[in-house]
Length: 585
Image (cartoon, rainbow, N blue to C red; front, side, top):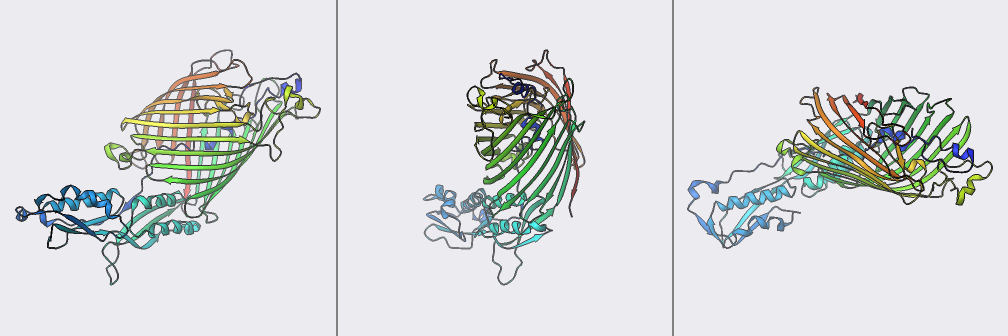
């Protein structure tokens, strides 16, 4: 819970409404923190190659044979642009050279095809070189049949749409196919791998014909839990989150999520969430919605007279504009309906009603050599990774949105009117916010990480739209909402050593780290800005086999937070996430 931010007004009832602010956005959306920031890559495995035959022209017996190349002709290209292979031989045209150079042209052409994403072999047929023209045969993989092995469950029809996109290619190209392979793996509860095998020899099979075998593993239900002590003293330091995800209930590539968070004393804070999303079409467009109810009765000095209730309903649509192993770009539009109330001794003190449209762009990128496993790096722990999210939000006067208090707050002074949480708050405010993450590993085990975040608004905001600092954002060691304002910037900087990927599936991996956090915020119409918190610390992250993740760290506040009389003590913080089960059938 955040501490008092503003107490403006000439009326005692209105001022009292400012004593307790509504629950911060980060406290409500606990299981969605930074879910847009995924810096790891995602490797696509396509097993199966077109065999390359040896080149007899490179044998010693042909060393004295020479010719002058005038042109290279490639047959069997089909839908492949012939110009793609011009660099393979352009430098040899008009030159007298040994016949072994034909092998070099063949290998260059094969490399160009491979770099363009084609699974293909280039062969030199038996021929007479007439006028310096050399012929090459290209045998490119064509997916003429597909098989699905495993149970895709109700989402099988959606999976088939992605498979059809891959099989429709006149010539198989991994660069074009990876989008649909990744979209197939994005189907909740499905793990999809592609293996290509030569088509069975029969009267209709041609060289290059392959069968695409899609191996599918299905997990209909996941359950996990999280315990942490990031909370404030007012609502309890410790809290636990229990979540279950049900995949493929309707066959639309859907996922239904149910979760509940409770403070160590349930009477102090409860957050309940339910969400459902599904996919439309064959390009990965996702539509979803979720509802959240949060109830809090902070334990402040004296009788527990304050009660905060929050209800948030959201709908959204997300489209993957780019989906590759090394970079992704998603666009999302959505609508949030936010109702937040504060009562004092059973009487309403403040009421916020926000109706907000938003648009968000999410992206991430990793270096391509890491995805290939070069230099000891991997797609999970790459040499360089970048992720970011930027969101524009606009409030509207719709569906019962709060009315502003107006000049001199006259609208909120009328008898029977329940004011908003901030008397100068604008329910139709404009907000732009963003966050990012940059990871760099000069060596596979040494990582430097920067996680900046910002928010800007020209308007005075109601509590839910404000930016805050503390344990859940930037400012580890401070209570959530230790600073909260309309505009702000900050971030986290870390140095870590070690890998979080165990060497064996049931092994343990350790990663010690040190950090520095900063968050600075400003509030419109309030003197004394900016308000800034900083902290340093270090800890140890641990991956425990395939089921658990533990992060224990100490955080030292470097200055006191607003409304504190002295700097806070060192805090020992922890978060433990455990996968309770993954039911495969």
